[in-house]
Length: 315
Image (cartoon, rainbow, N blue to C red; front, side):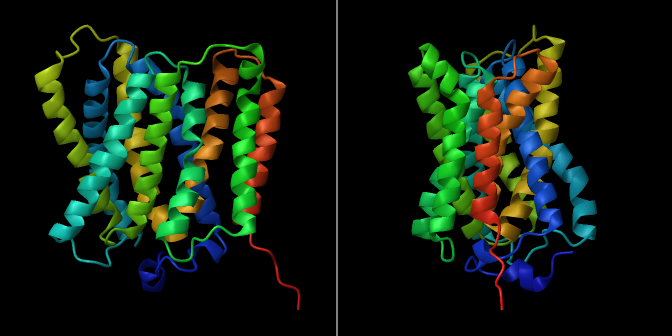
């Protein structure tokens, strides 16, 4: 159970605390949900326009959050410290529209031409952007040598992951990938904004984040693209899974964990997500296991350990 002291703790010192087993398990859950999202996203946009994909998955997420919130609050997780006033609603509407819905839409558009693993790798730059923004905007989130080394190791792992394609001289769809990297920067800004936002309940903030995106994207979809009458069953199933996992359960876990452990700890989930996305391809799509995958996993795990494991003092 989250104590009142933990819930009200300022950002200072967050990066230096020891992360508990629960926090690591929630981080692993985020890796699985976010890593699986790219494959599901690619399936969904096959026969459903990206605008409708974003709108529909957001409505599914609202149902999931509303169903899970009572049990979460009964256990004392993510309870409110601040009042849910106009300021708080405004904070989370901005997070929902600018730092959640917009990057999701960009990734959905990119999924029409780019493989899921490539988009997951682009998203893996989030810890780099988060570290730089946190260094400037958050107390207690300075770029120590340990954190810098961890970020560098994780980024090196992503380079190793894409090295075979680079060496083979395969063409890169620069505009789509640049858009995906821009969306990643928005995600990083969202990490910082969520940490700085008023501490209303995790359930309420999650509903505002997803609800604002659902309403706006539904209005946009109704006036810009037709209803997907010819969508395949696979696309509909992918949209539902996206709403339940990456948009629903992951939003609750994300808001809780970012307040508990800080944005840098949460952002490292995006370093592991490309590995999970690649692993799904190896296990279920018959994709080959390259040396680059093993090397990247080693570097990424080393980066997470270096940046987050606290050195034990010897007396």
